[in-house]
Image 1 (tube, protein in one colour):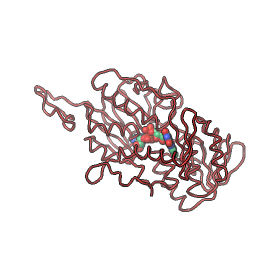
Image 2: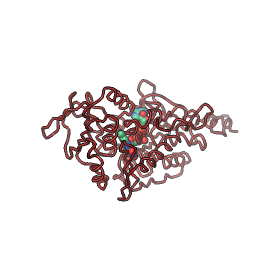
Image 3: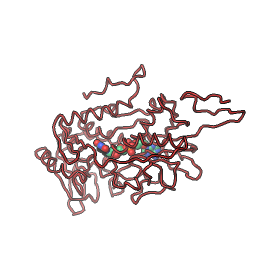
Image 4: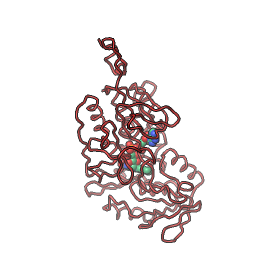
Amino acid sequence: MVAGAGKAGSMRGPWSIDGRMVYPRELVLVGGGHSHVQVLRTQRSAPLDARVTLVVDQPLAAYSGMVPGLVAGQYRPEQLQIDLRPLARQAGIRVIHARCTGLDVQGRRVLLEGRPPLRYDLVSLNVGSTVAGAGLPGVREHALSTRPIAAFVRRFEQLAARGAEHVIIVGAGAGGVELAFCVQARLGCRVTVVAGQLLARRPGLNARLREAAAGRGITWEIPARVARVEAWGAHLEDGRQLEADAVLWVAGAAPHAGLFEGLPTDAAGFVLVEDSLQVVGHPEVFAVGDCASLRDQAWVPKAGVYAVRQGPVLLQNLRRSLLGDPALPFEAQRDFLTLLNLGDGTALGEKWGQAIQGAWVFELKDRLDRDFVAKFQVLDAQGRPDRGGHRAP
Ligand SMILES: Cc1cc2nc3c(=O)[nH]c(=O)nc-3n(C[C@H](O)[C@H](O)[C@H](O)COP(=O)(O)OP(=O)(O)OC[C@H]3O[C@@H](n4cnc5c(N)ncnc54)[C@H](O)[C@@H]3O)c2cc1C
C-alpha cells in the first residue's frame, strides 16, 4: 500500500510502502535564472516526481533585457523583477535563501554559505554569470558593474541623482550598446563607449548604430581597451586618459569564481554540458544559461535568449531523468531576433541580416519583454497574474 501518493503536494513523501519507508528523490535547483523560473512555473500544473528545493542568493530575480529601459527611465524596478518566493510557494517548492558555494559531486551535496549542505539526487545550476575583466585594476573599486543587477541599478540611481557630464561605457555587446543610448537619454550627458569591437555578433547593425549615435553625444573608442579604472575616469592601454563621472562595466560574461570546482569546464571556466544540458560525465548534474557551455555547440553566446530557450528542454530532461528515460538534445537556433533599446522610444533590430528600426520596434521589444516577465510575476491579492502594474510610467 502506498500512503500519501497522488497530488502535487503529496508527492513529496516520504511514503510507507508495505511497511517500508520510501523517500522521494531530491531535486535541487540552484539559481533563479531564466530557465529555472520556467521549471518553477510548470511545477504547479505538471509536477516533477521529486521533492524540489530552490536555492537562491537573491529572492528577487531581475530580467536583464529590461535593465537598459530601466536606466532610460522607461520602467520602474518592480516591473522587471520576478519574486521567486511566491512562484515557488504556489508549486509547493521549498526555497532556501542562501548563496551556493559549490557542489560536493562525490557526496551529491549542494554546499551553502552559512548553512548545512543539501543532499540531491538531481541538481540543476542556473546561476548566470558575472562580468568579465572585473580583476583589472580599479574595476571593483570604481566602476559600476552591471552584475549583480540589483547593485548596478542602485548605484546607477545614485549617479542619476548626482547628475553627470560624461560617462564611459566599457563593452559594446548588446548590453553595452543599449546602455550607451539609454544612459545618454536619461542623463543627457556625453557617453564614450570603449571596446575591442562594436557589436561583434551583429556587424550588419554597425552603420545604423553609428548613425543613431551621431548628434546624441555618443562617441566610440573602438578598437581600444581600458587598462585601469580610477575614481576620475579610465586609463586606456594606448596611454590616453579619459576623464568621466562614472565608468560602467559591461565587458561580457565570466563564470562565478570557485562555484564549479570538481566539474568539467571550458577554457573560460564555464561548466561544460552535453546537448542534453547534463554536465559532461555527471548525468545527475544539469547546467543551463550563462553558467554553462555546450561542448558540441560551443558557438552559442551567453545571452538570455538561450537561457530562455533551454528552459523547456531542461524541464523535459529533468522529467525524463526522474523516469529513467534517456534525455533529449537541446538544439540551439543559429539566429534570433536582436532588439536594441535606443532609449528614446525607438529600437533597432535584426534577424537573418534584415535590419528594422523605429518606434514600432521598441513597442515590439517592450511587449515581448513585459509578456515574458508577466508570466512569472504571479500574484495579486487573489493569486492571479497581476498585469496592472506593467505599463511604463
Ligand atoms: C545590461 C544587460 C542587458 C542585457 N540584455 C540582454 C538582451 O536584451 N537579450 C539577451 O538575450 N541577453 C541580454 N543580456 C545577457 C543576459 O543578461 C544573460 O545572458 C542572462 O541573464 C543569463 O540568464 P541566466 O538564466 O543564465 O542567469 P540569470 O538570469 O543571471 O540568473 C542567475 C540566477 O542565479 C542566482 N545566483 C547567482 N549566483 C548564485 C549562487 N552562488 N547561489 C545561488 N544563487 C545564485 C541569481 O540571483 C539569479 O537568480 C544582457 C545583459 C546585461 C548585463
